[in-house]
Image 1 (cartoon, rainbow, N blue to C red):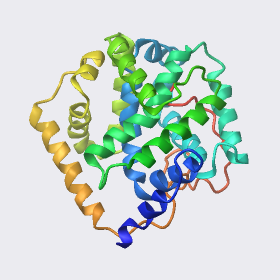
Image 2 (tube, rainbow, N blue to C red):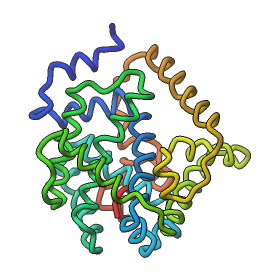
Image 3 (cartoon, rainbow, N blue to C red):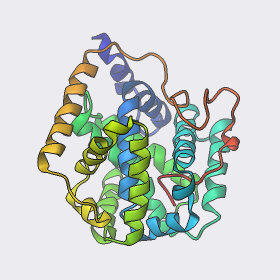
Length: 285
């Protein structure tokens, strides 16, 4: 029963008024690895939209320094979850995000779509590969948390209900996931970044495994070649086997958010402030 101590705490909270605490427990204690991986995969969702990938290509950030751009995003988002969006560090992180986004002409719909991926991609990932799925309370808390973040980013017309926002995301993908050369190039830069985290001998396998995890609509939008079906099957089986192991591990007591390993800012957050980060959000243009 100790394994479910955090879940019992979540169950006692309200997803509207307590969404910051619920997000902190879910992302920082219950599922830190899964949240990280699901948001990495969410990167690929956003790059299937040509207006997003095209702007990212014009900035040159992914070509010149993909690791820094990725780390800046991961830390900025972790600051918001760990400390709260209205805390001093949270407000500082939002100023960095808004300053960088303000340099470019980004459509409100693209911003809304990217925001939606932060809510719904982890929900979908954990329903398939988590040691337990997110409860309805956790799902609604994610919606209210990122809706509040979006409002502070100046994103307009964010749907007022969980279901409506999910429907917006699904409709946006159906109408905007189309092939463009910029999709292919930005997707490949990101794929190369992910592969760089592993020994050289493993990188071809990692590359095929990541592409195998994408749905067919995304593979077509990137112009990638889908690997054999058995590659995806093995990857999904491995993730589900991991979930069974994690389910039997002791409950996590220490937050794993801003103190997660990152390659650009060793030892973060010691010696750093959110204002020291300067790249644009890697899951948004």
